[in-house]
Image (cartoon, rainbow, N blue to C red; front, side, top):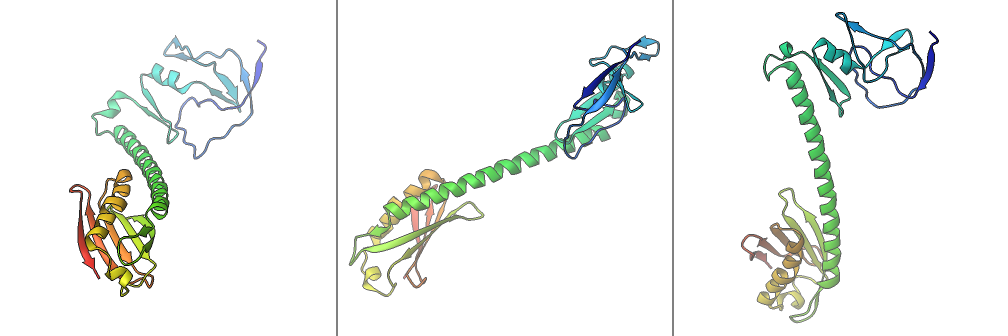
Length: 236
């Protein structure tokens, strides 16, 4: 019988064994097709793909051989691993096979959670930057009092997910610009303007710190998102 030769761009599964790749690649090979048949316990097997010879070895679909032997095959795509087992080897759900599969599934889930978390963190960072720009554009001045108070805003997210707001003024805390402001009006400005803008985007508690131009603390407030209430922690 005349042999047929085919150049393949991939390697089919070996007759037995487990494959694990650290990374995928392609390889051209010269394979020989002879209309190869395989007899198992006197019964000719049918294959989903035709067997061939390469490098002196016969290559056949692993799943077809395994099913002919009465064993199960499972493919773990993330870890590029083939698991072969028979029912008797399982015993119960605590078998090494089941445990290994569960471990791999957990690793895959953990990796997916980390990826999603990183995506969320990146999105939050972008949202904070946009919000910071908006506050600096729209609420950079407080005009009720002896004179106009100008602020630069710096926003960050704390480890407990609270939003931290640092407002740096263009005044000294000992000056009339700060001391002659209307206390109630200024708190309303913080609560109704600054906090409302933030909670439209982040449904979190807010820590507000106000500093003068010499980086001395002028005031500290805490906004409770659930109660929608601003509490004074400190005012100079």
